[in-house]
Length: 177
Image 1: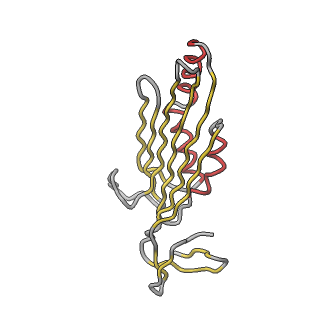
Image 2: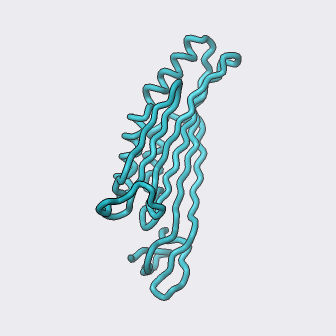
Image 3: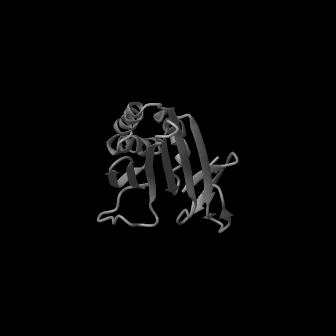
C-alpha cells in the first residue's frame, strides 16, 4: 500500500492499525414559548432528522470517503430521536462477512431532541462518529456533514490512534497529509 506523508511517498506493509475518528456534536437551539411551538419544533426535528433521513446522509458519507457498506441498522425512538449505524469496509466485501468484525470501520449518528416546558428552550443534538481503518479518511466528508445539519453550535474532534509499519518495519503514526 503506497501513501504520501510530508510530501514523500511511503510504502506501508501489512494491516494498517491506524484508526482515524471524526466525531461531531451538533446542536440546534430554539426558543419556543408556547406548548404548541415546542411540539411544532419537536415534530419538525422528527421529520427532518428521522432514521430514514439520517440513513441517506450516512450512505452519502460512505460514497464521499469511498467506502463499501457491509450493514446498516436504523432505529426511530418513541417518543423522540433516532439512531443509524453503518458498518463499512475499505475494499471489497468478503463473501459471508459477519457484522461484528473489529477490523471494519463504522459510521454512527444518534439524535437527541428535547424541550423544557418551563424555560421554553428546545434543543436538538446529533452525535456523529466516523471511525475508519486503513486508507479511508473521514476528513473527506467534513464539509458535507457540516452542511447536512442546520446547526447553531458545532463541536468537532479528530483523532488518529495506533500505528502501522513501513516496508522496513518502522512505525508510522500518520498515513495521510
